[in-house]
Image (cartoon, rainbow, N blue to C red; front, side, top):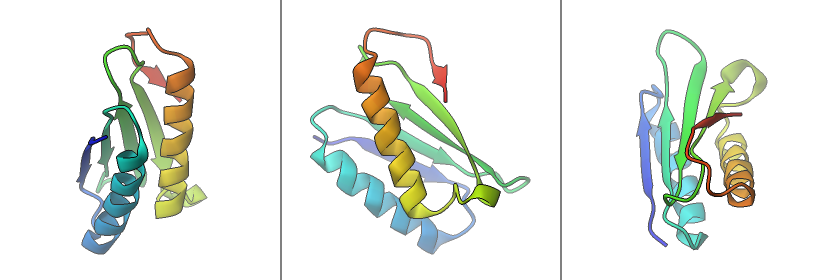
Length: 99
């Protein structure tokens, strides 16, 4: 099902395209309509991965640190998959959760 992907301020357009393609491909296989936002920060190495699903799913926020490999495209995709699995296991919660 279609979803929304937003990637901003990563500082590397090629990396942004790679991450976008991975996320887009994964979301195309998901039955629900997900919104994924990846926000970089030019003043630090901490990025934010935000995930929201249909109204009955809990929203999620995860901080990704560059020093521990969190900015690698496959690591971001793996984190996204884990977040969506967790969100599917805990529906009907309306407050954002921090992982």
